[in-house]
Image 1 (tube, rainbow, N blue to C red):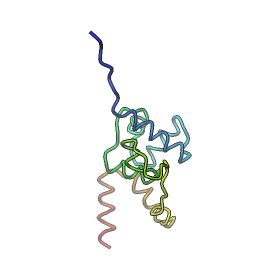
Image 2: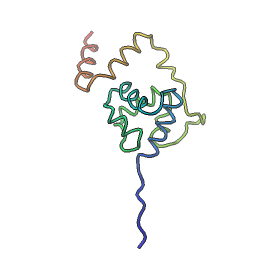
Image 3: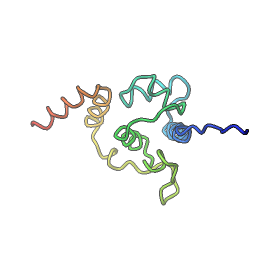
Image 4: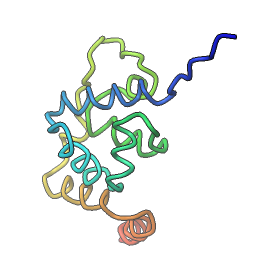
Length: 126
């Protein structure tokens, strides 16, 4: 009886994440794992699993990753290229932010979920 080959449902995502990191000049290897972890506020183990095709981030984090790496969310998750056929998309919204606003976003991404929610609440009060 032939054996069924197991298909890794995350392999395509991992390949596209690696490509997006390459396009964004994020260094490879262990440096990539630690850079992705720090940049998106997750553990190095989570980043390693994403990059190895062992898991995928939650939807809200996928949106952040696609925005930050300037690629289509559709492409990152499903492999469908945007109409332009280009991997990278213009990051006009992010590029229009001041350096101070970018620093706040970067710092916020390093916070755990509870602290991030508290920061958003604090900012919303003003």
